[in-house]
Length: 603
Image (cartoon, rainbow, N blue to C red; front, top):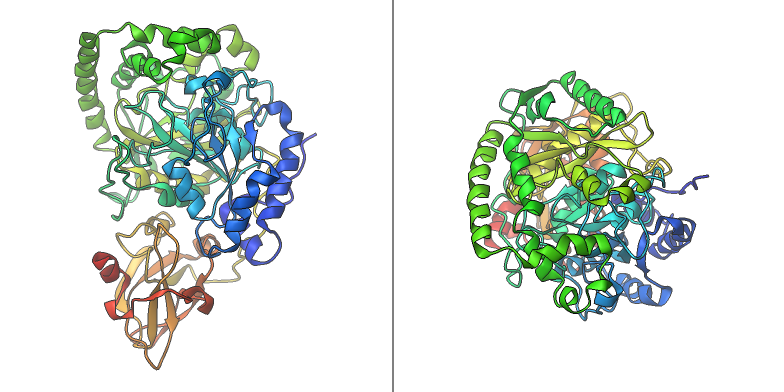
């Protein structure tokens, strides 16, 4: 019988429970440890942090500002990503080492208040999409333990699926951040390559890998992305995100989304009728909600996908396991060794020929994406039982990657989104695909899908949020004044756009407000405080938001910010962002800049 978790693990709900005194981080981590014992047969953890190992994080948290975006939020780390002082194994005990420093992304999350729960199980050396290729045991699906969890980020997905973390870090070369998300009913964000630092992450294919995020919803995924992203000069593949502070308004050309889909003749569900039906139901529901479909030719995507394992890129996996594969090959899981061992054979001529073909295919695929808001595919064609996977490990694994293997080769961004519970009782979802650096736009579309499909997140035993803001009789729209990160062109503006809000006016407050740069970030945020004696007029925007979206918007606002009445230049009072006085203690007074954009431009 499934146990019932007594509270929601979403970031916003934990923050509210902390603020209301209902929970403490110590209590949450204690509950997670107890629940991990109940789910020990799922083979989720390679290393679950002990009380002594957690204590430094709790102690550091006590001196940190509670307004930090991830204060007290528990997260899991795939065990090919470094956490200082904790062994990194890549699911190979003979390969293990203990790093002195945490991976750059892990450290940024900890600095933002997050608490690491432990290191999670994976397909050894991140070679697999199924979760069974580990000496620590096959990781089991959070819905039905007879089925695969998906991989290689297996434990990272199942830990969130079973409520043992609010979010987790995975990695993705061929689909490892998306397939497990589908099989465990989660959001799986595979950012553009180089958007998240790879420093401190063991490579599988160093030129293609990226770190990924598993979360309960797109708001949580975006928040974690905002904290984790950033250029890293120590990572040779790190890239600046040119769209980071620009609004990505998808689906606005004709008032509807235009989405690319694969022609029926090019789809493959590998005999899974339940997934066939779930995919058809997903498309029907989207079509009934003003989404326009355009068929694309999937053949060039599929040809690119085959290059990953049939081409010379397997040599990168060989390099990543040296010298172990040369000196002690028997230490490597048999099926993983079978895949990696030939990687020492390809010649440089084969690599260049493959690159020539890949670039030609990329041109064709990019042109197909150019005239649509995104491409939509099934995330996986079938979820196999563990028995089925072990019987034909290479064939079945290849089938799991049918819709995913091309992504990093073609330098695209994507997000896996749950849409249905199939008739076999397993979750089904789709993947939204866009060009490089379309991450925020894809998150906006994912948010629209969440509202449409109204699925519970994670496994069926994970509860809904503790609280929701209930609106009484209200007008069709509510005016919302924004002054910082939600302004047009700023990192959180998408939260307004995806809720259907429209810009009503650009104006100023009455000359009675002070603005402060709050601690924490990214995303960085200001605090607006009324001060009639020394205040000034501050640049703001007023957005008109559908009333039925206002509650979810407010529910996601972190302390010390909130919504109150703000006086604008014409003397009217508008609902808008304000700040609790304690939030500005020690904060920089930026009133003289006249507004947040002017301050950020100077900064």
